Length: 148
Image 1 (cartoon, rainbow, N blue to C red):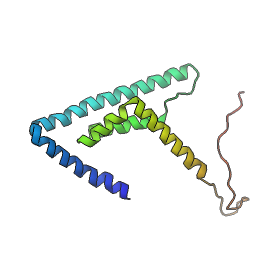
Image 2: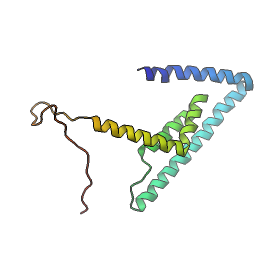
Image 3: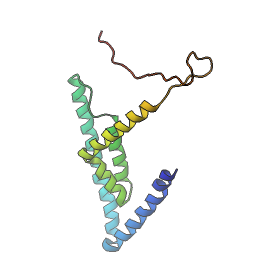
């Protein structure tokens, strides 16, 4: 709950304060130009990187390999684009930060590790007329199919 409060209340308030502070130095027209320019440039960069990711995945599939870049990387590009289209200095910095390939790959690695750790902690419990006891853990990890 505290993270949502920070994201939806504190971050916009801080963004507004930074924009007003920035407007003192470059004026209102300069600040509006900054907002529009980062939106246009950031949107174009996010779109370009999204298409690059799709092309790379197609090449991998055509070569008979599983694409290395996955849904997490695409989701990060989508979030980066949303941040860049949102007026503000902090969100623009975060958006450009997420569009850097090296940083994005590290973020994907950390997210994958976190998802794997969360997956191993989950237990499956059956209730009602189940033949399994409640404390019994069942591994439902998918295995590779044998080639036909």
